Length: 102
Image 1: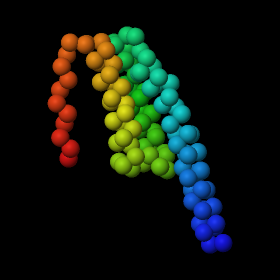
Image 2 (image 1 turned 90 degrees about the horizontal axis):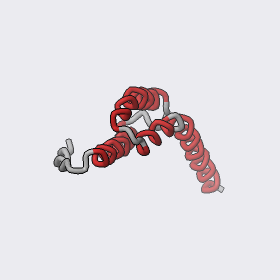
Image 3 (image 1 turned 60 degrees about the vertical axis):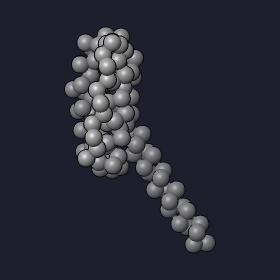
């Protein structure tokens, strides 16, 4: 019986986290889709402000993405898309060495 109660609490916690993630990450979707599929490299610069503003709101308001451990992987994924688009539009440019970890 004890295990069942603990399992119910864990499921409720995970469900709450999933709902929070869906609520706060949903506004990023159209921005990230435009970033990943954009055909005009110059227009990608127009995405920087709404992208960073939305990430700031996610960090400030979300109960689960308000820590470095959660936000950093999200930022890394966004930056991978930026790098991929840069390589797409500038194929002859050699990638820089990855930065060292802190």
